[in-house]
Amino acid sequence: MKPVDLNQELRGNAYPGRGIVIGKSQDGGCAVVAYFIMGRSVNSRNRVFAEEPDGIRTEAADPAKMEDPSLIIYHPVRQIGRGLIVTNGDQTDTIRDFLEKGLPFEQALRTREFEPDGPNWTPRISGLLSPDGSYKLSILKAADEAGTACLRQTFEYPGQAGLGHFLHTYQCDGSPIPSFEGEPTPVTIEGDIDAFTTSLWESLNQDNKVSLFVRYIDLATGQAQTRIVNKNQ
Image (cartoon, rainbow, N blue to C red; front, side):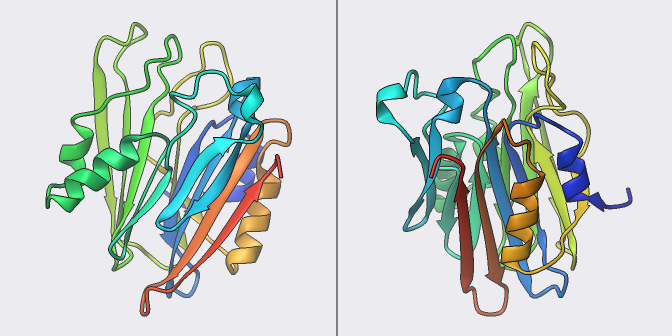
């Protein structure tokens, strides 16, 4: 499949939900990771990304407005060695625990399934970046409208200069919200971290976007640059 313009892809979709992009910079020297969250409810929109020593966590922008934190508060990004885990839920910790025991990404995700928020049954999306710039993306989603079974799909990529793959929870807005379908979308990655972060943030729907995390990791040295943008700050 021919890569598409990531910004056009986002501008054409008012509600992709939560999204992961992993790939490589144009010159091939940096691994690129982005994660964003969107929200339609007051509870979902009442969040910010906060930096942690090993990644980021979500937290309430206004604790007084927080309702059910169970699917809202989690660590989307955790570093493990020179690798990076990025997900849309607390499966980040499940993956980390399995990897620390020498067990694979896929095995960790066999213990998890989509979110228990019927009738939407929000998919769990996860990514694992390896130190060499190769990466995996996974989606766990409901096999039917009743949420009686879970489909598990994992995609593996070598990492190519100027190319990334974009996986998000929802196909588009709706009621119930339709889950993402097909393979992760190949997208072009252009510019340095600031240009990429700005274009990505500006392309997300103004009403629904909440927070964005972007990291560029120098594959030769392991040194990382991070940008965090929060609508509520």
